Length: 146
Image 1: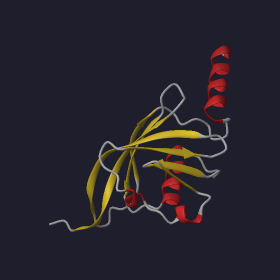
Image 2: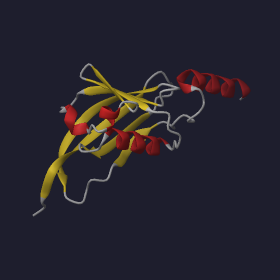
Image 3: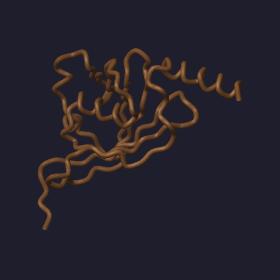
Image 4: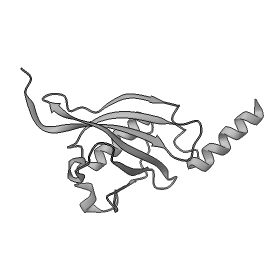
């Protein structure tokens, strides 16, 4: 028999706005993940190591890396449900906007709290290419040079 502890695993689908081809990531995280840790793991999934802050907009409220109260929040405090969406902005200088949807909520299993990237599509854009606008220009120049 497998013992469960008092956490849930959120299966999240993240779609990057304003870029083509599409960039999608599927991640599984504990609902007890604090916002700064969520931001750090998401940057790691993308292969980015700079940190220019984050903003999360959920339930008509904004939480960001610049306010002390926000830094203490964890995902479970938002009481997210299946199919619910929120906006995650990774890098407040370049404004990489991600639509995050809760695909599933599962019971957590003791010893299984580590975040996992379970899938995805499309290469992550280079971190400091100027955000979606800079990325589109970079791709256009690459196509013209080919």
